Image 1 (cartoon, rainbow, N blue to C red):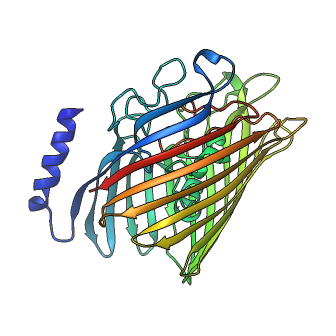
Image 2 (cartoon, rainbow, N blue to C red):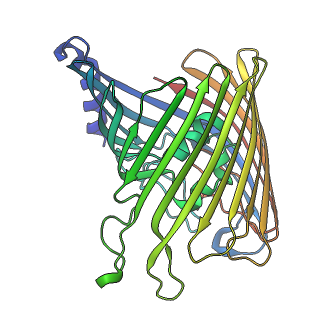
Amino acid sequence: MKKTLIAFAVFGAFSSAALADGDSVQLYGTIDLGLTHFTGLAPSGGGRGTTSTTNLSSGVQSPSAIGLKGSEDLGGGLRALFEVETGFCAAGLNQNADTMGEQINSGGYCSGTGFMQRHAWVGLSGDFGLLHAGRMTSLQYDNEANYVDPFGWGMTGGARDLSPLQRAGDVRLNQTVTYIAPQLGGFTAAAAYSFAPSVLGTLATASGPGSQVARAWSLDGRYASGPLTAGLSYATMQNNVPNPVTSTLDGSSKIAQIYGGYDFGVSRITAEYVRLTEEYMSGAMNYWMLGADVPLGPGSLLISFGNNRDSINMVQAESARKFALGYSYALSRRTNLYTSYARISNRNGAAFAVGSATDYGGANVGVANTTSSGFALGLRHMF
């Protein structure tokens, strides 16, 4: 990997001399390190009570990553585009370990599950819009992280901790083709289809007529004009829910998303509602969040409040609420200091835990009916 990154640096420094006018290749990245303290976590080995952890973590506000992106002018308004991006563990390779000390979620890269697995796509853009294919984030994730969540799925305040998108696996998708239409009077539409969204690949989960392969498709419509942004989105993740009789993954999950925001100048207020249902299961997981981004000095004050109510196949619905407060202080256009505090209150059997942009899921596991909190203080540099 070291030799590969050196090659990227050399390529980024000298490739421009070989490119035609209007063509470009850019080496870019993020290095993010922060002190984190989490409480209300499940103890190692499944013991009773809760535990806490204090770390120097990589990727607290946003994952540490390095990538290449570029474009080529093909003439007639047509351009070829590409982007490849890999995560890396700026604090060392022992981050994101589960309660048994094993590496999870990252494959040793802290984010993206493997080398160049955060993004890896190629596409074409023109008067028709943008068409690209490869591994990329879902339309619903882009809405939540980029338009609604003031923490951008990062720090300890990110919507990620309670979001139904995590449960459905609708975050980063493999073998995906996405089309984004040109903006028309403030309206933009997008559609995506994935031939194998998860790590299960293209092999069927059972033989014969009942064999199933994971698929996914989604639609998104957004209106953005001046201070207002509003949108609707829908996604189906096929063959990712087990049949209770055969245990074959032939059931689907469906996600409906309503989101929006308004910039009042003194602050930007955002809101989101997400509903997740699963085939063969009664009930639904309902999530809503309110957020605010308030310009304050050379930075921004970040506030969010979210609620998750999960009644999927349950007699009594589990519920969790999260409050988060943070501040990002700009030292320059590319470097900032940040701090945040968040608290999750679990009820009726819910067991969510506060995390960060890379410490989440199996790394931070909550305990039913307890409170989890998280504090972060760090530095992020982008190049």
